[in-house]
Image (cartoon, rainbow, N blue to C red; front, side, top):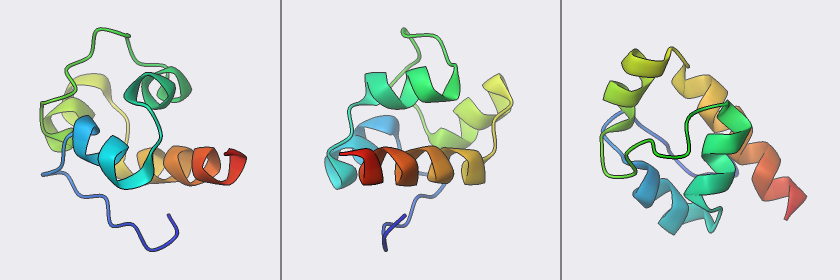
Length: 67
């Protein structure tokens, strides 16, 4: 994602701060509920909702290119 490191210890809020992409946009692109916690670690969210960190990275990269 253009040099942005996204890890399982990060939160959606931190990804939003780093990229400028809203958490709502990321959740929508991943197909996750809008009320998903933005302060919970991505690793926990990954296990709960069944997405991979690579899928998240790909979504963020696509959204960064879009904007």
